[in-house]
Amino acid sequence: MSVSPARAELQQARELLQANRIDAGIEKLTVLANQKHPEAMFELASVLLMLANDADKIAAGMRLLRDAEQLGDVAAKYRLATASLVESAESLDWPHLAARWQTCCQHGHPNALCDAAVYFGHYGNAEQQSRSTAMLEVAALRGSLVAMALLGERLAEGRFCTADPARANSIRQLAADMGMPVPPPDPAHGFAPPEPAASPDAGDDWDFGDIRRTLESTEADCLDAGTGLYVHAGFLSDEECLYIQCLGGPDVAPSISVDIHGQTHQNQTRTSYDFTFTPECEQLYLNLLQRRLADAAGLPLNFAEQLIILRYLPGQEYKLHRDFLPETHFIPVAAGGSGQRLRTVVSYLNTPAAGGDTAFPLLLKDIPAIQGRIVRFDNITADGQIMRTSLHAGTPVKQGVKWICTLWFHEGVHRPL
Image 1 (cartoon, rainbow, N blue to C red):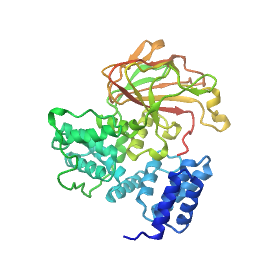
Image 2 (cartoon, one colour; image 1 turned 45 degrees about the horizontal axis):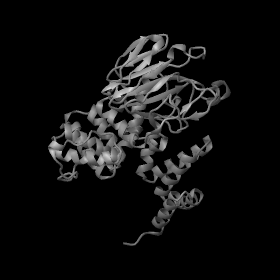
Image 3 (cartoon, rainbow, N blue to C red; image 1 turned 90 degrees about the vertical axis):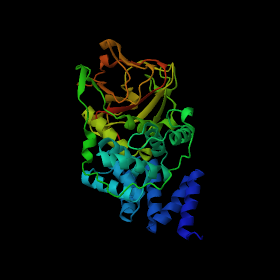
Image 4 (cartoon, helix red, strand yellow; image 1 turned 120 degrees about the vertical axis):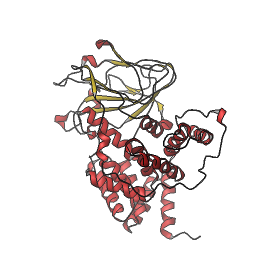
């Protein structure tokens, strides 16, 4: 089969980018984008946004995405929908977001289908929940590794589908080989081919009209009003917790800390592994979850740093510390910056077998790490001083593994995307 000249040029541009010949790759993509090639426009926008260091360059990248969307590029539509939830570079209109998501699903976009499966699994009626497993099937077949991992757990548990532990074992093994934090296969059930026996049908009825219900949260218990220390039980569902783990878990690396002089380095204060979600690796439902966390914090999502996921193995910990930044690491709001870290929100993505509490020694409070729970607290006082009682620690994990994710909110707009 012959390849069109434009397709060949696009492939050459990709190869240049993969070889780290960024300028040459951008040049080729720019030629194709000027010819209104929608896929090249999307890829050029993605590269420019990844490299952007000022508002003008971000605006140029977003214009390219919108132009690509107008020409029918589904990947651009999905990126715009995802970005709109942050409301820094793309405005949020809830009906428009729902329509974008629906169109992406209708075109079989794998991440959109994976997101829809988690959404309908949590919020759908019985029919939608059952159909959501077929959405995971289609998304996995189209290349979503997260969908594959979630599918394996549904098949193992028989949740929203007929249990198939032998097939679940094979999927779990594949997911584990790719770094996904899933349970190991159960040898008692044997193994079966991971592919579905029949072609899955995800349907065509994609109703996201009530999408704002994703922001609803559980009631908070106040542990210390002065520190703004609140705990929400059952804030995230089990599948939402696994979804976040599978999105970031394969890429965790040793954590670094910032000392009082503003220097970053590894040390024995913080022995975890972590991964920061950059805008290009975020998914739509992940940003919906971040919106829910922001609502619980009482702050806009674009006041937050990028979401960070952390893994603690047995013996690992984060010793006593506060989350405020050294003066070298933030610009005050009065000087045009986003200010100091105002508030922290920690989400517990699993329950370790033993240990891993969050301890506030000056408040005599220990918060056990329980899956689905979140804790939030302030880092500075109303007049901008360090919140003395925010001193806390992630105590050593004694058995099992501890997974959390954290959002640090500043005093002003922080995220450019």
